[in-house]
Image 1 (cartoon, rainbow, N blue to C red):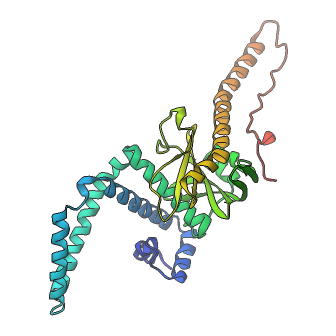
Image 2 (image 1 turned 90 degrees about the horizontal axis):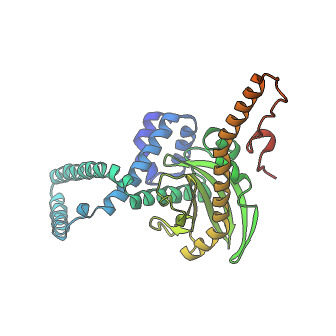
Amino acid sequence: MSCRDIRELADSFLCEELLAETNHEILRHLETCPSCRMDIDGRRRLRGALRVAFHAAPELQPSPDLARRVRETWRETDLRERRSWVPRRRWLAVAAGVILGVGLIGALFLKRSFANPVLAANVLAQDAIGDHRNCALKFRLVRAPIRLEDAAERFDRSYRLLLSAPPDDVSTPGGAVHVVERHSCAFGGRRFGHVIMQYRGRVVSLLMTADDGAAGSPDTADAIPHLIGRPMNGLSVVAVKGPRHAILLVSDLESSDLAELSRAVSMPLARRLETSALTLSAWPAAVSSSRVGARRARSSPRGPLRRLSTVSHPHSPGRHPASRT
C-alpha cells in the first residue's frame, strides 16, 4: 500500500469504516512510514479538537429555525432526486459547502479550545480514552509501543518511575489490582507512559503524560482524584496532577470507583514524582557546588587537601531506582 493510498483512506480509517484486512495493511505501512504516521496523528488530533470546539461553542449550535429549514430542504431534495440526478449533484455541492464552512469555523475555534482549561481537559481526556481503546483494548496503535527504559532516555526520564509504580500487585479497599503490562505509547500526538492493570475483571489504564495545564492548575489541591472531560463510549477519565505531569486512570468503571482506585495507585505515584522532581532540581546545584569546591581546593596555596568525590545522581546507571523484576 502506497502513501497515496493511505491519504485516500485516512479518514475512513479514522472513522473505523474499513475492513479488518485493509486496516492491517494500513498499520503495516504506518510502521515504516513516519510521514504517513504524522499525517494520521494530525488528522486524528484535528478531528478531536474540532469536535470539542464545536460542541463547546454555543454560537456554533444550530438554531431551531435552521434545523427546521434543513429538514424541509432534505425532504424536498429527496422528492426531487427521485425524478432527476441534477438535484443530487446540487445537494452534494451544498453539502460540500456546509462541510467546508464548518471546517473553517472549527479551525477558528481550534486555538481557543486549547487556551480554555475546560476544553483542554476535554482534549486530554479524549486522547487518554483513545489510547486506552486502541492500545489496551484493541491493540491497533499507529505507532508500536516502546519500552519504558527507552522512553525515559528519549522523551522523559520520569517514565522510569513506572517500572515499579504502581507495584505488580496492589491491595485496595475495592479489591486486588494486578499489573499486566508496562510500556510507553503515543496517541493523537501525545506521549504516554502506560501501565495496563486488571481490577474487578475490568481493564484499567494508568497513563502518565507531560502536563500542559489540562489536568488542573498548579495548586496542590489538584493532587486529589477528579473527573476530567466527558465520558465517551462508557469510558471515564480520572486525573491526579503531579509536578509537571498528569496521571490519568481510564476505564469503564463507575466514576466513584475509578476515583477510589486512583487514590490507591495514582496518588502514591504523584508523591514519588514530587520527590523525584525535588531531587532532580537539587542535582545541578550539588554538581556546581562540588566543582566550585574542587577548583578552590586546587587553587589553595597549601595545595589540595583532598579530591572531592563525584556526586552520585539518584538516576545514574549504577543506582537505578526502579527495575523490572
